[in-house]
Image (cartoon, rainbow, N blue to C red; front, top):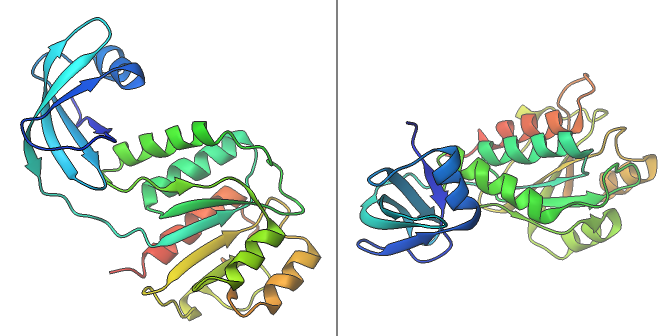
Length: 237
């Protein structure tokens, strides 16, 4: 059986009993078919990761006993991803894969050409949680409520951060970017059909916004998001 990891939002410590019910109970009991004695790895960002075993298995809940804290590598997730949400199946891919790659938070932005303006945030949080469990990470990225393009740009003016936005017309390739990883940085990916002419003019005039190109190929928004995050994460130690 592969390693089973579960995010646990309550405090974790050795010898503590943890009661599992709801969706996590269904996952352990019916999907993974775990039995008494099965090892389960529990984690959260505050306490780290712990090994536990199933102590009792009942009809609607499972009791775990934590017995050992394990060493883990806390991976850096310094980049935030602002994006204009594509339609449902593409959005799921974007959220899942970018979480696996490593991202600090997701910022949905409603631009002129944004296709998907009403997001089911709770469903996306579930996708994020499952991707973190699968990818051996500790940090659960936040996903914020959608914000208008105007408000997003205006809010950046008040923050100490830089925004790198993908622009096929930019003459700045990724290797030429000057990225200060000691600051907060945001990658901004436009919608299918790109930003509108007016939006591009606004972004190109703002001091805290820097354009970059991923090449001359026209990429789907989820492909651009995944590719950009891989490149930016490669600049971290």
